[in-house]
Amino acid sequence: MKSKSPIFVLFITILIDLLGFGLIIPILPIFAIELKATSIQIGFIAGLYSLMNFIFAPFWGTLSDKIGRRPVMLLSIMVTMLAYVFFAFTHNLTFLIISRIFAGIGSANISAAQAYIADITEPKDRAKNMGLIGAAFGLGFIFGPPVGGYLKSISGPGSVDFVGYVAAGLCAFNLLLAYFYLPESIKHKQPAKTFRFRPITDLIFELKKPVISELFVINFIFICAFSMMQITASILWIDRYLFNEKQVGFVFMFIGLTSAIVQGGFVGKLTKTFGEKKLLLIGSILMAIGLGTLPFAPVDMFYLQLISLTCIALANGCITPSLSSLLSQTAGSNEQGQVLGMNQSFGSLARVAGPALGGLLYDVHFTMPYITGGVMMLFTYWLATGLVKRLKNQEIEKPIL
Image 1 (cartoon, rainbow, N blue to C red):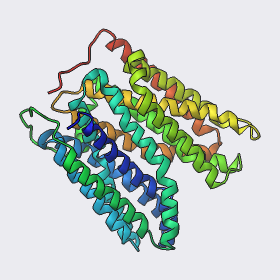
Image 2 (image 1 turned 30 degrees about the vertical axis):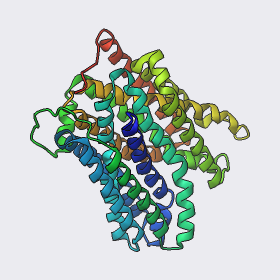
Image 3 (image 1 turned 90 degrees about the vertical axis):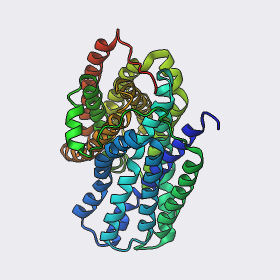
C-alpha cells in the first residue's frame, strides 16, 4: 500500500462529511418550513448538528485512543450513512430532528482523523497534512450547497429523498474505501486508560493545561469571529449590496475555494518558511484585517470586498492547520484523539455562540459583527504572541509511536 493512501482516504472521509453538511445547510430552513416548523424550531434543529459535534468529537477521539483509529472511523462513517438514509425518509419534524442528531454524531469523527494524521506524520510535516483536512472543509462548502439545492428541487415540496439518497450513497462509498484502504495507525498501543465519556469534565481538565488551554481559547475566538461573519454576510450582501441568492453563493464559493487552495497546496511551503507559530500570528492579523474592513466597501465598489475576503480566506487557511498541528505536537502520544477531539468540541461551541452574537450585533448596526470580529482577532494575536514567546526556545516534538 502506498504511504499516502491513508491520507487520501481521510481526505475523502472529511470531504464527504462536509459535503453532507453543505448539502443540508441551504435546504434545511426551506424543508423545515415545509414541515410547518416555527422560527424557534428551525434554530433549534440547525443547532443540533453542532451540539452533537460538541459532545461526540471528544467521544470519538478518546475512543480511538483506546480501541484504535480504524474501528472508530468505520463506525462513525456507518452512523453518518444511516443518518442520511433516515433523512431521505423524513416527512415530519421528529424524523428531521433524529436525522440531524445522528448526522452530527457521525460527522464528529474529525478528531479521530486528525489523531490518525498525527500517528503517521512526522512533526515537521504535520501542518501540511492537517491542511488537507482544511482543504476538504473548503471543497465541501464549495460543492455542497449548489448540489443540495438542485437535489431538493427535484425531490419536490415536503421531501428531501434525493438529497438523503445521494448523501447516503457517498457515505457507502466512503465506508468501502475506508474498509479496504485504511489500516490501523497505532502500531504500539499505550496501556489503555479507563474509557470515559465526560465532555464537560474533560474539557475543564484540558483547560487547566497551559499550552493546550491557550490553543483552545485561540481556536474558540477565531471560530466565533469567523462564524459571526458567516451568519451575517448573506444578509449584508442582500440588504446593502442588493445581491441575489445566486451571487451570495458565488461569494461563499470564492472563500471556500481560496481556503482550500491555501490549505491543500501552500500550507506545507508556508510552514517550512515560517513555522506553525508564525503562521498562526500571520493568520490572526489577516483575519483581523479582513473582518474589520469587510462592511466598509462602497455600495458601488463591491469588488473592494474581494480584498477583505481574500484576507479572510488566507487567514483561515493559515490558522486552522497550524492550531491542529501545534495541539497534536503538544499532546501526549496516548491522548492525541482526546485533545484534538476537545478542540473540535470547543470549536462546535464557538459555532453556536458566533452566529447568535453576530445576529444580535447586526441588529445594532450592520458593521458591528465585523468590527467586533476584527477586535477579537487582534486579541487572538495578542494571546498567540505571548504563547509563541514562551515556546520560542522549546521543541514541541514528540516521538510518533
